[in-house]
Image: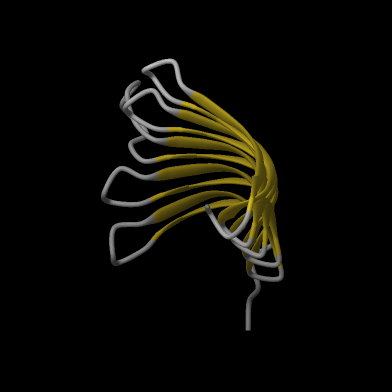
Length: 122
């Protein structure tokens, strides 16, 4: 069995692709993952999963799309991050297992704002 180590590129049958670092055949270190839908992630990987700092975009080639820039744990938004919607609304704050949870600030394009505690996305 040959395990991929070092830097490499994989193009998968479903149209997805990965370019980055590997250890024992799993994504490890820095890398970028692209989906056929245009979604894109560039950041840190540990043991094949998004872990550490990274940036996700709903459309890699569009300047106007949903984006998240922040912390990941076990493939989920977890820790501090900033999510910007195509609409221009922005959330800056804490995430827990992919949901806004903890202290955060929501800024809407109409000028309204909420700052305070979030529990399970609310």
